[in-house]
Image (tube, rainbow, N blue to C red; front, top):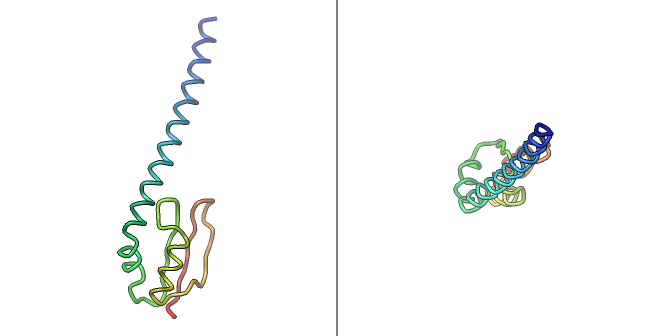
Length: 97
């Protein structure tokens, strides 16, 4: 009987630990994205520096998709292609206008 209780408690502890890790990852991604948004002009100026083609990856820790599109447009680029890498990540390819 004691071993069953041990396994049930271990299972509950494992589920709780997984939940806390998931929350920590979400909070970390949120902080990283807030930092990226605060540094948006620097990030966008560095990415769109006059080259003909620019590849930009968007994910949960980078600038939001809309900010990248608008920033590229302001710097003379247009979106020419995009691909969905994963559920939360995509690659954007821009061309200089």
